[in-house]
Length: 130
Image 1 (cartoon, rainbow, N blue to C red):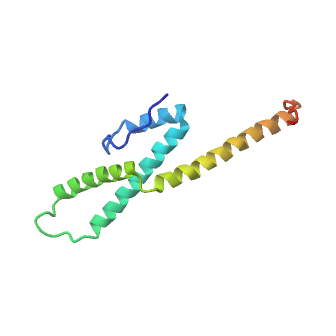
Image 2: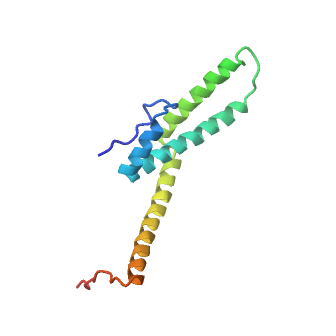
Image 3: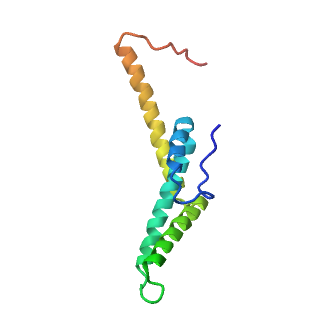
């Protein structure tokens, strides 16, 4: 059984996490959905932190390219840590997307059943339950 991606202990700039997520999506779609939603939550929080930093005054001794780069890296890691604890966005996305996936899976079964009926094949008989 694949292990879920642990975004709390990994770096925000992990380049191999996408490959791990793709492999996990093939093996365990439910866990991959949770990991992708958590990464989206992290991205959202990073954008929020970036907007908050841009709203503050930028003058003085600490206003340089180096401090802006360090602050950006810090914000990425903070956003990832905040998302690992969860603010609720990932949970809502998982709930909505899993509902959508279930509906699509049900629709796929109905399409296959309709195609079998159109081709002349008879669907398996279902006995009424008593």
